[in-house]
Image (cartoon, rainbow, N blue to C red; front, side, top):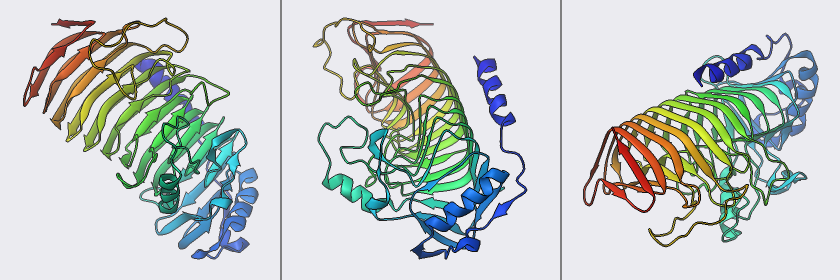
Length: 423
């Protein structure tokens, strides 16, 4: 798999935008950068002038208040250190997307573009701030119980939302206070996110996922620092009842990053298009709700395979391992029976976890469904200490050098359908 993934990333690197010859400053088109005057039109004009020339729009020296901006192909948007792109607090500035009414037009958005870069420059850059607090309050007030759209029943704008595009780079930038998800990609090919900081309050920012590639491929995420109120990263491939188009997630490499709060590194739960060829390594997690999190259910699944995790350190993570085909809630042991297998049955197989340590945990779970148990899951050099042990149900698990130290109860709790081989 390694050669497949790295070959894909080589293609991503090859297609980065060429060195820009044209620089456009929104101040020249009327931007005030005072944090009070809306600079939307001035920034958009700079984009329209610069993009055809493979140019760079530079925001520097102030706070640029703006509504949604449409990004173009062959464009570099550079937000220098000391500059902030600040999203408008007016919900009317963000209309519902015609193709996806569960979300609004994002502060930065693009459809069908190629060779796009958003950067802070060569080192530490500026900030993209979504003014999320006002939208979080609206979401809490208008929340719909059991809503499955992803918005909690109140559609909000993403911070960055890219659709059906290719060769995309985000680097040396800080994203914060997003109304909803921070970085989203739908049906994109060739995504590189590097040295990016994401900050949202852990307790008061609902649905503020850090990075969510939907049905996208050839993705590299490296040296990111995420502290947020939902999934730190979530790889998703579609929800049947919501999405008119569904496709797989493929060829993903996530490495050398830290997650400080949030729901961990998630695969799912929306996996109707399937997912394969994912490699995760050299990750630190601190105080996240979950660590390695692979989740789906009987209405959201497909073929989920070739997921490999290595060299992960966790401290204070609630569930270092949460692999379940029952998301969001799993029944008590012995209370469920097999259902008919169909196209949406989650099929988890060929998954490996290696060299993972976790301290201060609550527990860990590996729970499959009886009609399609988790298959060929290997745990190698795993050390978990916490309140309870590792619960296994309807899963074929091979273990080598696995140490689980619970404060109480059994280390490994084998329930129905648990087939555990210890080497």
